[in-house]
Image (cartoon, rainbow over all chains, first blue to last red):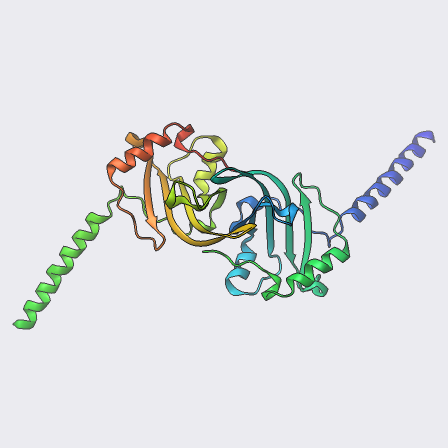
Length: 160
Length: 160
């Protein structure tokens, strides 16, 4: 009887923990774009050591998955397009600048049905160690309203 | 008769020109790496507007084909590895730097048998419009002797 009780208690705990996990990452959350470093490099820029946007100082590299490349080439990004904005801190030397460690990663994912209220795109942000940053709906709305000024909400162009 | 003569003369000219073309690009010459912009981006650096290496000022992006990525990951580059050094001129602004037009493209191709005397690698250089630069054997030897200081003749590492 004691053993049966222990089994039932364990099962209850498993169900509760599973519930927590499901709530922590819903299907609407942007997941970390594993393998993006082997996706296509769209373009780059460098923000100087005194740029006011502190968290973006250094190299800003943009990567796109195959679907997003179709978007860059046609002007319309199909569902499943993912664009990664990779912020790599810089080692500023006298006459050149090298890459240092990653600062963070911004991600845009296209799903025209699911994210219809934000132009078909969802936004995510990850620490260098892949931990997702807590992006509130208010922040996402801010991302979206700024991106809305662009063709299919994308600022960058694929540099040939 | 006059017409036949013109045809024969044209044919002779075509054969002569074809001969020139064959001689201009031998199988040992590095060919332009079509499609490299969709290969993996290895890493980047930026040379400042006052860098002494004038032709390399701006963004220096490195791209690698699939075989070369195996090389970066294992330390030994298989035959068929191609590494592209893409020099993109920079638009230096007050607090950031953007990409401008391409300056030129350097290419390294691995064939351990064919290029055994230069460490298994051959070197090529192309203008922004893809025209090959005339790289003499003396210049290639210089490329090779400098690259020989590195593991399998490659300076860069794949930035994760």
